[in-house]
Amino acid sequence: MASPKKDEKEDGGAAMEEEEDDEDEIDEEQIEEFKDDVDNLGDFPDKVKISSLTMMAEDFSDSRKGAQMLYRIIRDRLMNQAIHEKQLLPLIYLIDSIVKNAKGEFISVVEADAPTWISHAWNRLRNEEPLKLKLQKVWKTWNDGNIFDAQQLKLMGQCFDVSNKNVKTQSNPSTEVAGISRTSDGSLILSTGLRHEMQNILDDMQSDVTEVDKISLERLAQINPKLLARVKQTALEGLRSGAAGEHSRNESSKSDGNGATVDSSSQSAAGSSGSNSTPFLKEIRTSEQMERAAAWADISTKTMEQDAPALVKELMGLVESCGEAQYTQPEAMEMTQSLAAASATAELVQKTLERIKTDA
Image (cartoon, rainbow, N blue to C red; front, side, top):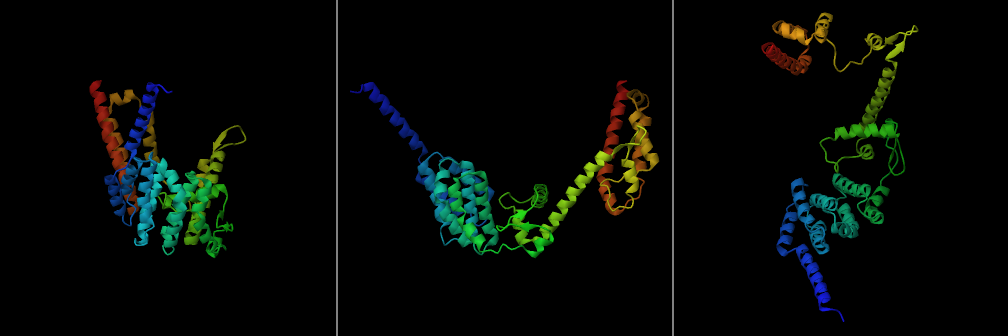
């Protein structure tokens, strides 16, 4: 026969578990608030609204019942034929945010049901190509992040596979201009280095676009082959210039045959006058101005203390002399900030030298 103390302990443990479950229970007021916010998402994926709903969901991520109830609210609206197609994307992004941030019980709840609503959304968006691609991009991030079971992910993506089989995968003539072949599934056949360079360029072009909305090189090949060709050309030029730069660095120091080292940079500079390449920053100072500027490197603190006013006058004269050069209007506009910085530097140096002189 069990002792009274043991029975009391077991009863106490059960009571504590029941109390913890009660804390995780979601009440009607919270359900209604969540539903109202979901209904008000509209047809634009507002980050603030989605984040707010995700935080509400996170409070019940450890409750199976709570996760099921909140997910059902989103799912029912997602499957509702009465809402406009454009209202589907914010709901999809909300589910995406919840499984990636709230996690917990939502993972298994969404995993079991996602193949149904993904296929439904895909079919409803058949005439909304940009929205279809965003849905597929969400699924791809789940696949890449191993958020769900591999078999379930495959079931979720079946609608994409069926759609892709209905699309001709023959090479596009415009893509062939870029010299890129494609596999039967539409993947571009590129070297690792070239793909990396091309993707970097494409990412720079999409700097203002969210990760989910960014397009891949394969997608660019479908919607804008000419732009893909330009991206490839730019990437190849970048790779060639990078290799040329490495070669230049390796060749920058050579022996003249007598054991002396010859800097070849001046030779290449002299020989490049007939080329079309222009350095990003051109040296426009005269040799006299460059000599005066170089002389500052030899000025000691002692000299600065002895003749601060003269040094300031020399510096201001140097700045003014550099400003005598003639520029085109675009060059003058580009130089404005540099000259302003030089003026501010001169003022700072003057104050420093005056303080040194006072302290002395």
